[in-house]
Length: 163
Image 1 (tube, one colour):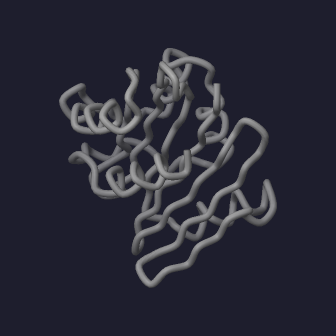
Image 2 (image 1 turned 45 degrees about the vertical axis):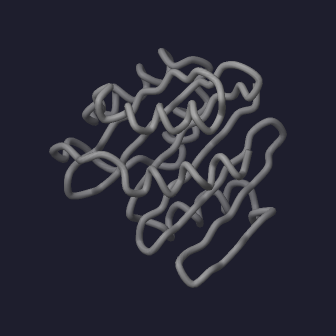
């Protein structure tokens, strides 16, 4: 699973174009609540309340195609973008088939906060890898894995639930 998350992280760090800024950044508590959604419809309802702009199917097409090619199974996905200036993006997907899982990602430009908040809540990461170009960290919490990947000032945080 970590290989899937790491490869998707790089893709989402440089993802689709942004829309106008519409609201504040996502708190860690909001992120964990969103990522805990059992269904795509549940995640969509929570994300729509944030007031962010929903990504179009065209914006998600390359991500979906790459995911299906890598994972080998169907996927349902929705995504939102906070704004042009922030670069924040949020997505949720449900993968079907032999590698079924539910997952979400939050891409932002606030690496310190997104590393400190899960550390404060769940303790130090079980895996921490510092490189010249960035840092990766992960926490395994039963059937849930939280993965953090930072490249420069961009960061993506994944929460994956194995089904």
